[in-house]
Amino acid sequence: METVGNAGEQGGVSVIRHPLIQNALAVLRNVDTPTESFRRHARLLTMILAFHVLEDLPVRPVTVQTPLEQVTGEVVDANVIFIPVLRAGLAMLDAMSDMVPGSKVGFVGLERNEETFIARSYYQKLPSHLAGAEVVILDPMLATGGSALATIQLLKEQSATSIRLACVIAAPEGIANLREKHPDVPIFAATVDRELNSRRYILPGIGDFGDRYFGTE
Ligand code: PRP
Ligand code: URA
Image (cartoon, rainbow, N blue to C red; front, side, top):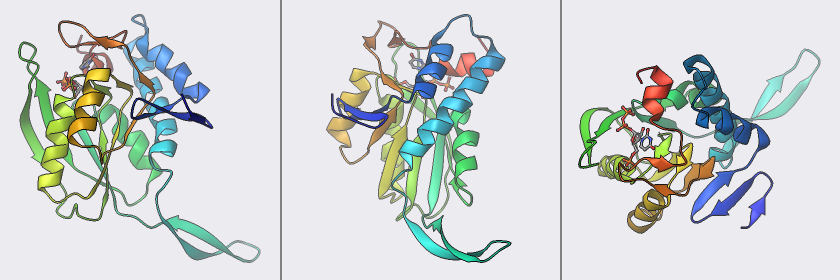
């Protein structure tokens, strides 16, 4: 595996190996982690992920007056739109959007049928102009890839031209599905796990991310 700093390419995914991300991931994986700690570490992990997911954002120069003199600074010069996939994607929204003042948020509601594993759409509310925006899908678990594929298709139908996916854990099946159908969408994750079980849960995984984050187990 080729590594650059704390990020490396693993099977088509940018895996962030920052020690603080891996520390947070170990806490999230632990079945004994209580809800409050799970939420806090999900936020910490997402904050560090954000630096890598957004590291190529364009900037423009601005003149800033300090208390002592003028200096040229840089501000983000991009229309950034976050798309949390309900519910679990909400766990990543605050940490990401806090990083980008002026960012917009759209919502996609999808729920996986636990027998067919097919994602059913139940809600969507998107900003009107996706073309030219930097669109970041937030969904902590990439398992079969069904939810991510449905979201990407929806965003492309609404004219999105630059889409990236930020997740916590990616599974080989979901990665392969995305790479085949949407090779233009980069995937960022804290780790690539081994496989899916017969219920299409990621192994070793975290369990049901939404249930653990919202305390609905
Ligand atoms: C989870 C997760 C992803 C999806 C991943 O959502 O948050 O959206 O499963 O699985 P896939 O890659 O096989 O589609 P879930 O359907 O459990 O809904 P929730 O977020 O409301 O808990
Ligand atoms: N969704 C989850 O929350 N966890 C998995 O392991 C797979 C899908």
